[in-house]
Amino acid sequence: MTHTDPGGHGLRTVPERWLGVALGVAVFAAFFFNLHGFPLFDLDEGAFSEATRDMLARGDYIATYLYGEPRYDKPILIYWLQAASVSLFGLNEFALRLPSALAATGWMLALYAFAARVCDRRTGLLAAIIGATTLEVGVIGKAAIADALLNLMIAASLFSIYLHYHDGRRRWIYAAFLCMGLGFLTKGPVAVAIPFVTSLLFFAFKGRIRDWLRAVFNPPGIALFLLIVLPWYLAITVREGPGFLLGFLLEHNLGRFREPMEGHSGPIFYYLPVLLIGTLPWTAILIAALWRARGQLRDDLALFLLIWFGFTFVLFSLAATKLPHYLLYGMTPLFILMALELPRMRSAFWSALPAALFFAFMLAFPAIVAAIKPTVRDPFTVALLTDVDRHFGVLWYGGFGIALAVSLWFMFERRIHTAWRMIALGVLVTVGVTGLLLPTVAAVQQGPVRDAGMAARDRPETVVMWGLNNPSFNVYADRHVERREPRPGEVAVTRFNRLDPGVDYEVLFERNGVMLVKVAEE
Image 1: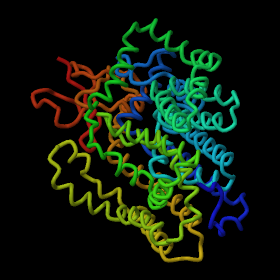
Image 2: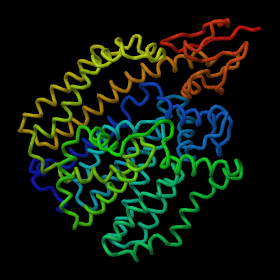
Image 3: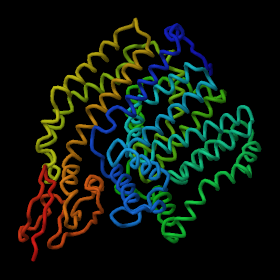
């Protein structure tokens, strides 16, 4: 594999600083643009954010709780970072999402630094631009959950492992243990399993298993890992007993591989469409890169990157629980392969086609929703969609219409280098998703919950959640809320079809099926 810029004549004549500017634009558009502009999504963003709010309210920085019950889903690091951000900027969407945006930025900078070191600076810049403007990365990189931070740690640990293989320096071993420790404190065993198995397979293929064993059983590295991990894991075990370790390790890690959790299942090929859609608008570049890389396994870098992606793809394809963002743990190496392939791309039509299809789908999306709406049978979902049409206005059609026109022009315009066309389309996709798609979906799905929470913030009564599971309500209400049936004199947030006709309720808030009611005193 040639780690240079073959065929990229349009790129070699452009100063690298312009690619640097493009990377800055891509990172801002993907991770910071409109970061505060739409409500928190339930369940994940709401659950992480409420656990952080509750942590600050209780002044307890060891254990996390949700609805008054221990939350054993994830370790502590992301909650600490969110708590620090909220302490600085207040309890709002910007503060809760900022740690993820910063982690995603660090992820792209680490990608740039690694690719620039093992290839060249242009490849590093292209890889980071591709990563930042990939559809799924842009969504996860601004979500108030643990995955952007975890991806940074997994990527940095594997970059360190390859650099140790390349030059043999011990500092890379320590860097890998450091990142795995922080990853283990972010989301647990997956932060170790992927680097461990990927490096084992790679070193075994290269006939250097003894070098791998020496690196894995490095006493200072192990000590560094334990120094990072043990204090909190011991503290939570002392506080909560074996409940955390049993619930976290057995149920929320091993259990996800044995059986689907919370209905998140899928067929064995689940991650194939996730990969093709998640890498928009770069899907054609991905296919070309994988097609070329299949025949270049003698190259150390290509082999390492393909093992990393391949193991992750197979691992989560075999797992019973399937969620789209799991595949991100193995997508970082693809960004490097795509950056190496991009200067070779000659077909303007095929490279821009995925973006054109995406924008065309977005233009048709309101009509699709309108066609599906009459078939919906769930009364609460029907209520949420009551006025969905008002969210699709001039900005929606104008924004995606212009983006579609640009993508169609790029499909036939040959005077602009493919790389620059794709960078522009990547930024357009990112801006469209962040500025139009996510705010619209959030307004329909989460807007009523947010407004109900704001209405409940200053109520003197006890507030409970009845028939809903929307932890973001607690965040917007800025108060502890239990999930149970309300008692006389209490206020409940609920869905309209849960109300008992025989009970007297005072309606405090009502919008699109979400209600805030006070139960009459007996």
